[in-house]
Figure 1: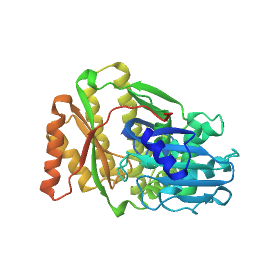
Figure 2 (figure 1 turned 45 degrees about the vertical axis):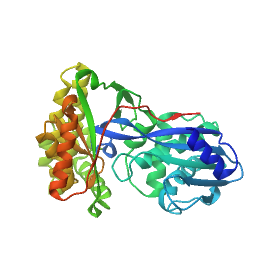
Figure 3 (figure 1 turned 180 degrees about the horizontal axis):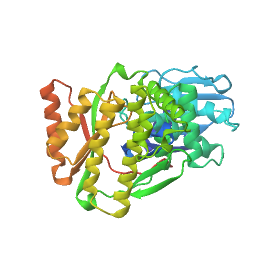
Length: 382
């Protein structure tokens, strides 16, 4: 904290009013379900975006990132408009725009950011930037907004200002997660429950494998799949695909003539069911090792029905499972990014080594592998 505050002072010539943090997240299960008003089960990572911030009342927003060359970005808050800011600064600027557009009196701010959330890894680095900015401004301007409302405004910043049609899972996980828990979230009404998730107590670990690749094929794929899911809901006469149960799926598929839409619907409905089955295992205190099979199912669905995987992700999953992991799947938007791997604690190092070895043998760059420890959501540090 002191480092970011000291850097703020060097940049802006005064001490910050406070320092805040918001984490990245990894999603255990439930992918491409959030914009279908479905269910997800993310957990916050120890990796965070940290912001030192001071309030300004002169209509000026100044933004700086330790992680990006280019100096301070200075903007007039009255001139903020969707599509008007490029690069990393669009995310915090979009939050200011979203707050003001919703009628909240945000007059400006000086902001200095530093993040340890890997970018491009499907771990919600952008949501962490948005949520930490929203939380800081909520505190400094006394807006009194609760965490779900902050998450919705952060999502609106990404949707309407930056132009990325994401669901609300990433922002909700960053804003609302608790240490030692996974967040069971209903994305329709934003109701959520903290689910105890102490893998160490049962001799297990969760790993993240960051493939460190992002394929251009993924550009626009998220929006295309969202449109396909919405077309499926219209064809089935439901508001959203979360209204179709696993038991109703065979009949629903029989009513759909477009094969692409059929595949998308099959994935969403089955992944919602996998979230329900995972929650049932966790709530019952049963064998958490059984969650591994659900991860493998989920990856096959993302690979074959949604078709958002890639060779590197498929290799990470197959190499991990082949080396003794209980299960693995891609997580996030796909076409690169990360996989999540459930392993017996004693096998974590050998599984990680096997994945690295498989990548080397395939001629891929070395992946990053690190433990996913359920961590605290957004908070004020000082």
